[in-house]
Image 1 (spheres, rainbow, N blue to C red):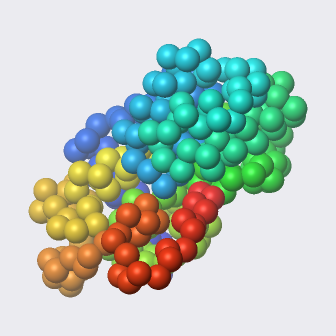
Image 2 (image 1 turned 30 degrees about the horizontal axis):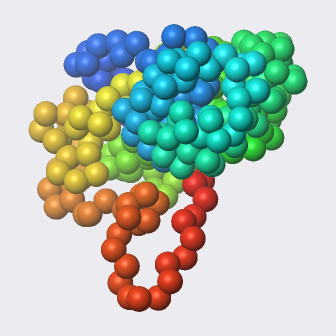
Length: 261
């Protein structure tokens, strides 16, 4: 069996094992396509629980609507989404997305379905602050396009199972899933990504992974299991680096801009 066929076989087995053990995930959590898009922007560089608080603030203020977000002053929007972190940066990104949504799609992300997948993706990537992961999250979960979403959980799980490098490029990872599931079914991509999130959160942790309890544990080779018994310290996130105590009395540099996802 060639390496490509082996990778496809392992990915299909991963999906079957995770689905059997964990069941359907009903993901993405959002009441409307707009809420999904807002959540995709707010979840950049933060935990989902913080996004939920920010979205709850927007709902309480009656602001989770295109016109309300478009006309709201930047300072007010930033205050409402403060729990999601990097609130000034994310407020600018939300404003840019809403301007595109109103100006090009009539305020409805579903209208992007009039474009081909490639054209829709290119259009979203021109919006300030939207990178491949955010764009694909919107396309899959809000617009129903058959495109696989990759994230940090995806990279960690694939790397630990010997399917990609630790620093694998986004589209290289995505291509593995598109080749493993060539029918390009949005429902399958939706469910598989949701299962990867669940496995990454509860089992394939940065430190002390729970391989024995993990649904994907049977797919690990003995050598891979041995390497995971001694887990390296996880890389620090930009937020963690920013909160570290200074090592000297030199002035600290300004906080970095968060990366587009």
